[in-house]
Length: 300
Image 1: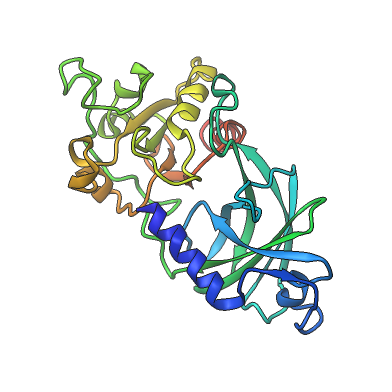
Image 2: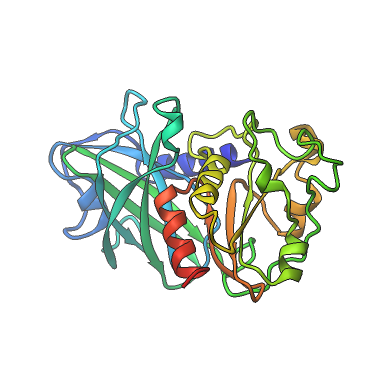
């Protein structure tokens, strides 16, 4: 599913400005086009890691892929956002390279890190984003499509009262609950409905470790499990829910994905003791980001 979103993003970019070495700037001074086409710059399509955006603050994750297919992994990247490719940016910020795995995975991940920028979207529409990793001659351009409302539950709304499966409902069997090759049993002891009834804060991850297909989905369940172990002395509970019916992609998304209105995966939601969503992450999330969000949104 996510692969189709990323493919469409690439098509939009190609139709808008192409992907080639740009040594002659033809854009009006100060526009996103002019910034992207500076002397010696090579323009590539930016690869987004998420797709569900609504007006307001936007956490935008992305990859910058060089012409040889290699991800660029400089610590920071300058980022601009504009209402159009030929318009002047209204915001400039810095994206930080976030490690999306955990130490135990070492260098086994195809994409061990991803850029994350925090942007502002004043209203619905198609925005243009330019990213320039520091110390490189590459400019990456892509689109952020902002709808009037996100399809996923909004921050501040009540979490759906889903009776997600647990070890109790499968008579202690992990197989129906996860496709992970090294499952953490503590992620399957509490359902969403039980956590809401107990009025305890919790972290909920919708993901499928086995069938994650895009370069940007990352080992999200491993990250959640790692943070759970780090925060074992806190009241926060952690829940993992697979995304496909019967863990079979051919059967489509399961009832819990539909109850939450999710059209992509992975997703991580933070829910407070009052049952309201306090933060959410689409796509990959780092240990640092997740721990920081839990500290400020669930434990503060």
